[in-house]
Image (cartoon, rainbow, N blue to C red; front, side, top):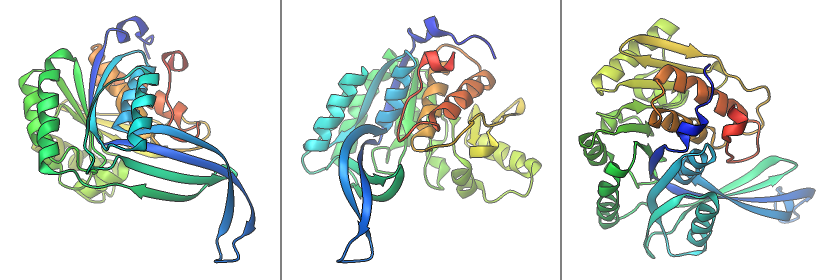
Length: 309
């Protein structure tokens, strides 16, 4: 691998659009079983909030040194206040559309002895009016950035992602998509799509060999008119498919502690590398290194330029 382009990264301008979430962690200890039901009683000793979803992608890109703008939807509630505060603390420029009828997406996790005991999700789909407002907010920002990332967590912010991709490509900037679901036609015309192994199986079915995967992946890439398709494969590393063929890199994690948000770190690293002109094979290797570092940390975390270098 080449030297990490730290100076160039500080000039990179990344736009992130998608499902903004707050990850809330309650840490405690379990010493007894509840007399009310056969469940453990967690005595909460510490609480921590972290940015999730598209907000975590933005935070990761900033951690690498890029200038980042985030557009998404939040409510008028306490989680939204925390999201704003954490984004400001991270150095992300936020354009968040607030609506009292649309609660901020919140994932609350209860952990004991570094093991997740329970997760509770609070979320609602946005209205058509909110989606129109989001598109109007995003459209003028394309010309001010080198690359746009669409972070799709199927919470509804990217229900009209097709129109957003069309607008972005008209402005001539690279479009990276973290997909969800099985309908990949929504992402037609993007520059790069980054499904994980499970998401890829949803899109093209189960493959029987590496050759079979390559055939299915290239067919999907051509069908969607993508420049590149990157399949992240957990312990099997990552495989990149382009018109030039395929390229693979093995996983680099020495010890996997928590995979939460690892895909966000990979996506952010790819976006930053693309923004400074790094080609896809080299960008994949930096993203793989970043992913290998972040899975050794608890919860949704980031990787810095210093750690990568």
